[in-house]
Image (cartoon, rainbow, N blue to C red; front, side):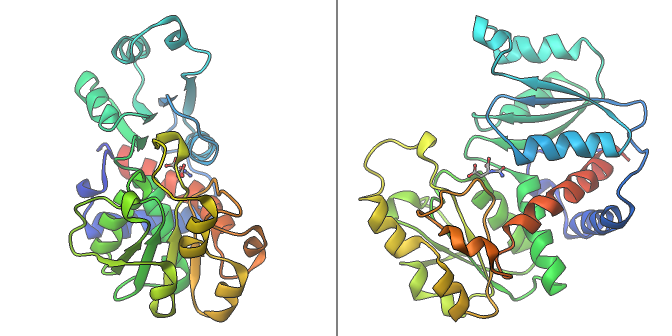
Length: 292
Ligand code: NCD
């Protein structure tokens, strides 16, 4: 039994096991490994895909999910994060799936509870299950990520998806490239090739992960204008058609017209809907990894 707070707690073998579980759940669809277990899904930040797929994953595995949504909770009456944790802890639950706007909130929760904790996104820090489902989507097409060139494009600075993916894709042997405006790249990016614009390296890539510009985490002035951003860091259908073997991912929600044009969605190499579908199986697999 183990928690999943960040990618660094996973070995290459753990990842292979999680992928095996995910592909068996893709066929089997249900299991009873969480029978008799109560799991809090505590979301202090907005979500559609991650929250719904975790909720469904717990139910498909026979568990009971308790949804806590910070909006509409006693947080709005001034109750603190720690008090909220202790309140829900009184119900003797076996697990927590938590999303929070502050980095390391799941680690703080882990210090306050004996239960299993799964990080569903903490600030700009980590989003381990998103990285797992991204890698699994590519793995489903390629069979292995070893030696593949993958470029992460856009607002890397604010992206927990990028941070988890950089770690996970490296463990799986991919070569990682990053492209974005200088103001949206972290200062320290070890073992990663920085590319000035998407156009400079797209022809060498096997996959690209487009990121959402995280306006909610941004102060003004980090991008010159949306039009200029799109010119250097967006992908459109013509680019995808031109690079026949290139696979395109985006964690969603997408800002259409900014990092991605809407007509791309129907192209066979744009795997955004597959990512959503595989997200359910990966989250079932992660629950199995954590609870058995
Ligand atoms: C991501 C997140 O919340 O970090 N979305 C998701 O989980 N599917 C990416 C984003 O919001 O841009």
